[in-house]
Amino acid sequence: MPGDLGEHLMRPRLSIVMPVLNEAAQLPTRLARLASLREHGVELIVADGGSDDDSVRIAHEAGAQVVVSKQGRARQMNAGARAACGNVLLFLHADTDLPPDADRLILDGLASRHRAWGRFDVEIIDGPGMLVVVAYMMNLRSRLSGIATGDQAIFVRREAFERLGGFPDQPLMEDIELSRRLKRISRPLCLRERVTTSGRRWAARGTLATIVLMWRLRFAYWRGASPERLAERYR
Image (cartoon, rainbow, N blue to C red; front, top):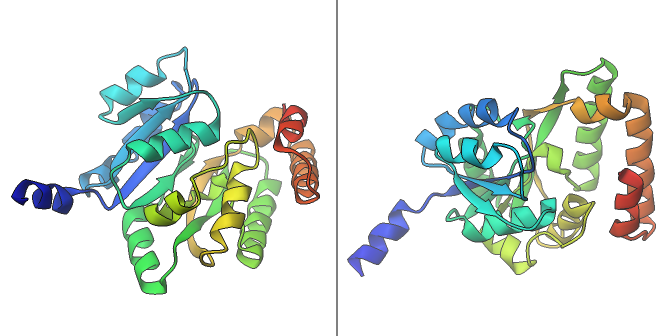
C-alpha cells in the first residue's frame, strides 16, 4: 500500500505525446525546448511510426520515452496515450512549440473552468505573411465551433479520452472527429496563449493551394466523405 501510494503521488499530472515519422532534422531542437516542462515533472513520450532515420535514437538520447507503433498519426497518438502516466494528455505535433508555462496553463485552466479538454491558439511561423490571416481564422473558427485541430495542441483529461476510445482509427481528420466527440462531454478550454507551428506544410504545396485544399477536405468531411478517400486527395 505505501508503495502504491508513493507511486500515485509521483505520477505526472501532464503527459505530452508527440507522434513522429522521420523527424530527425527537427527533433533535437523540439525536444530541447521541452526540457523546462520536463523539469516540472511533465512526462514526454515520442510515438514513432516506423522512422528509418535517427528519430528514435535522438528521442532516446533526449530522455524521452519512445513507443513504436504502426504508422498513422491516430494510431501513434493512441499508442503513446496508452503508455502515458499522466491524468492529462497533450498531443503535440513535431513541428510545434509550446509556451514556456504550458503545463500550468493547461492544468489550472481545466481545473478552474471545469472543462474536459481544450487547445491553444496557434501562430504559424516561417511562412508567407498571409499565414497570419490563416492562423487568425483557425483560432476564430475553433472558438466559434468548438472544434480543434492538431496544430493547436489538443489536451484532454485521460478519463474523457479513454471514455471515447481515444482517437478514431482513421488516416485523416482524426483531430476533427475527436473534437466532435469531446464536445458531447464539455466545451473546449480555448487558451489564448499561442503555440507556434511551422509553415512548412503550406510552403511545400503552395500557400493558397493548401488553404483551398484543406477547406475542401473539411467541407467534404462535414458532408460525410470517408477519411480514406480524403487522405488519398490529401496525398
